[in-house]
Length: 247
Image (cartoon, rainbow, N blue to C red; front, side):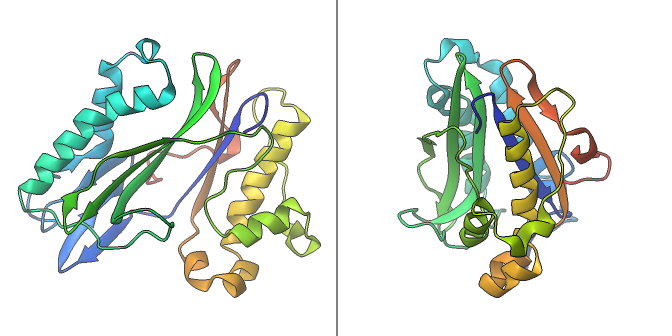
């Protein structure tokens, strides 16, 4: 997060799915996020996450919420309820992958970062859905502290530290990333750092540090900015093609 706004990066690599006890859970497909039935040929998805999230957020006004966390709690309540009902039907099997973060209970289904401006204040909230033995655990919603200029990374921390220190061995991952509006030097640096970080986490250097995590990072890189003056905007040459990209 910079003083003038956020630089947000995502990376996609085809559809994401898990094969669990001969059951397929297809988590992403284009702009959809859903949990599929026991078999891919066994009918339509039982739960469409993006559709449920979109319906809920459109029904609730953020202006009536004091904080971003209050807003997140309100729009996630029906999503959490409906996912729980779908799970109780017994036709869904979620992946039993324990969280690697200290203190996080159960197995993570999805973690969502919500970044932006609420009541003209920069805010960041993390939402986590998890389960234990196929039973939903309580919904977790946490407000994250923001320090202007300090990157928030999800990947290989040593790579992030080396980029912050301008390690010359990682210099080939840096490139110019330009938005379609006049950015400050700070915003340009944040955009370039975002691009370098995700590239380096999937590069040869990262494979020597954490091979398994590095192997899971790859695909197409997309970057956007969020600011009070310009709202949400994709970087022109790093914008997803929603006809082909799966997010």
